[in-house]
Image (cartoon, rainbow, N blue to C red; front, side, top):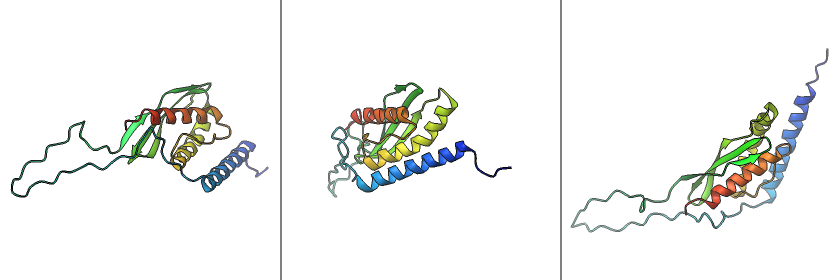
Length: 160
């Protein structure tokens, strides 16, 4: 009886280790880039000083005067040969605060497993780069490209 792990497990472990090294190397060599011009930094809300002698109620903010805070923008649904990819980008204070995966390829079990492995890596790449200009994850090229396109769409359509 052999105590060696199955080839598939060894291959997957090697793939993940390699991807981790690529991500670590990229993070160490690429400085964080500023957010694209399509998403300007949020400005703090302006306040008007009140006179102490005449107290007046502060009006509640309306949609046009509410401070720009945390907002979520859905990216485009990008079709890939293995299924659709879509993300939602969370923008806070003019920076990408989070990326949530809405749809990933689901055409086959292998596609689902690769997407489950690739999307956390792609999320971290976007957060580090603060843009959609990210490296693809080996073995999940279509998912990576769709993820980047969906992120770019969200950034291009973010209110600002």
